[in-house]
Structure formats: structure tokens, C-alpha cells
Length: 476
Image (spheres, rainbow, N blue to C red):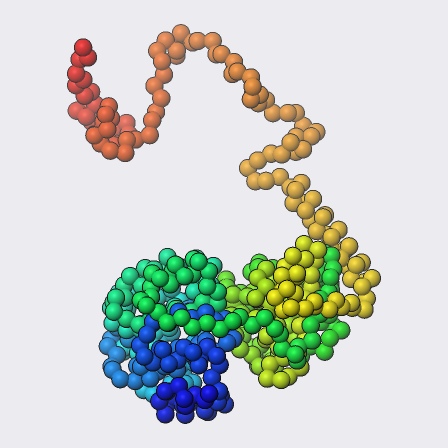
């Protein structure tokens, strides 16, 4: 089947042809006709299957007729991350260059004033992350009651990142009569329940997740101790002919730690994770694409939607906890028939994740060794000793405002009452203790609380008039 067989307009087909694509992917072949019909679509497809074009191409044709109004977008696409949102915006620019459609991208890290200016002119396509969109909604800069087409992309990632309450709130602001396209990499019971809330009689389309890796990618796993991970990675980087590489970590904080280690040892590296500002992330990505940065240490969430050609290597510093992410990671190399290399560094504690990966790909990933394992072991021992010493130093240091038991050595112990010892009774002073002492209490929260004075905050300067006690009714 060709794109021309899907019912797309000549303008869209011309733009697609200029990108070099001739044959639609399975998800595009299944979804595009139903989107053009105006049907709700429930799609199961992972990133990298051509899913984005499966809704951007028909949306361009649907939006060709009609006119945008100020602050009232005609369509809305929700993405979980800034990078994915920017990728979708690139798709609209590439495929919609022969269509007179306006577009706005609402993501964090970008100027509110620039985004407001675009919204004021009116946009046909609004691409946004949930948080930034709600910021604009609360400021009254965007109205959603004119949205005719809604796309919820990467719904499973939305759930993992805690965005579903925001998505539900956004959907509640949309008109009930609309077309909704809902895409997720997996279709669990929770996902299906969520889809039922948003969709009306949807047409289901699904593409089986990829379970095989490209034959052009050489894979290997290096099994080491936990303390040997960083030295082993550095040895791999020096031994391999690395032109450029993605290095994946499972956690954001490990991205910064590993980046610091690599830079300290003279490697040209940058980082990409969700806590970075948008301008910093875009700058880092541009430097990596241009070759100014050779190694990009990143997390899975930050790397979603990034398309960089001619990547020679992928290193899994951590074995992914979700086996499908392994396919996604190593798919960054060996693209378009080029040769690629993907190496995973695994510890004993990650064996269950490695087994899940091998079960998914249907074969055992060959074990590899590197020259200089003795050096790696020696360096790992030094690292362990330094961390142990650092841990002791931190443990021995007194915390501010508190004294540790070992800080009392060499000086007289403080006189403190034991927990199980009753406090000593003080002999009464006839002058001071003849009457029970009055304790000061916090001022009342309400003036009409029982037994409280209606004047609060005057302290000792209360006029005598206000010191007249309340009349109390006599108790029978």
C-alpha cells in the first residue's frame, strides 16, 4: 500500500513524498482512514512505529477547512514530555508546509509572552504538555471550548508521570462533541478504563510492540560488580571506536552523577533529563546533533521522541526495568541499514531485568569481556574505599543543633532526666506558689470561642473596659 491509497490530499502527499517516505507503517495504514472518517480511535503503538504521522497527516486535511479564532484552538494534542511535544510540532511543520495552518507549542521553559502572542492570533493546532496548558487556562489566555479534535498521546507515560488528573481536568473543559484519538504503548486494564472515559465508540487499531532488534546492531552484556560500573563504562568507551553515543540511566540523579564522573575523566559529555530547563535541554540536544558533544547521558523519559541519525553506540549503564525500553534504547543505533553497537552493563542485582529483556527479544544477549579487568577491579576497590571513608565522615559529623552521643566524650555529661525517671518535685514557695500559676495560651481562632475575650492581639495594653469578665450563668 502507498500513502496515495489512504485518501490524503495532494498537498499532504507532496509533503510526505519530499521527506522520502513512500509506504505507510502498519499503524499509519490502520489509523489514518478512520481518523479521516472522524471516528474516535483507540491506538496501541509504541514510539518509533510512525504513530505521530498516523494522526498528524489526517489532522492536516481535517483542519484545512475552517478558520481559527483568537485564544480558541481548533485542535489539541497532549504530550507527556517537552521533547515529544517538540517532535510533534516538527511533524506538523514538515507535513503541513503546503497547508495554511497555524500552530502553537506550549511547553515549559519557554516564554509565556511569546506563547500568548501566538494564542492571541488564533491557532489551528495547539500542542502542549498538561502542566503548561493549565497555566495558560488559569491565566485566561486560552479557551478550550472550540476544540474539535483531541489527541492524548503516550497515555501510559502520562499515567506513569502522574499527569492523568491534569488530563481529566483539561478534558472536562472541552466540548462533549469532538473527535478523540487516544494512543498508548500498552493497553492495560487501567488504560482501557481511562480510554472509556474519553472515547465514544472508538475504532481500535493496534500494532504489536517490536520484540526483535535490528540485525545491524551488535549487542553485548558486560557483567560486573556494582562498584565496577563506572570504570567498566570508561574502559568500553576507550576501547570502542565511538563516534557518538547515548548512555542510558534509569534515574535522573544517576544521570548527573555519571556525567560528573565522565567529565572528570576527560570525556566530552552532556546530560539530558527532566529536571533541566527547556532552553538547556534544547541547547544540549543541538550540540549533540551537531557533534559538539560526543556522549549524551540521559534518562528514558528525556530521550523519548529524540531522533538523531548516525549514532554509532548505545550504552545501557543500567539495565532497563521495563524490557520494552531496551528495544527503544538500542533502536537509536543501527538505523537505515548502518552498523551500530549496543552494550549493557549489568550487576547481580539487575539479573531479573536482564532475563526479562532476553525473554522479550527471544534470545540470549552474548556476554562480553574487556581488556584490563584487573585495572577495573583495582579502581573499583579504590572507589569503594573512598565512598566508605566519605560515609564514615558524614556519619561522624555532628548534625546542626544536635549533639551525638560520641560528641560527649572527654567532657562532663549533660544533666538530663532519664526517660523512665519521674521529675523531681519542687518544694513550694509560699510567695510564688500560694496560688496556681496561670499559663499563657495561644490566642483564640474565633472571637466567640467560649471563655475567650473578643479582643485579640492587644496584649497588656487592653483597655480596662475590655477586661470586664463575661457573665457566666450559674450552674444548677
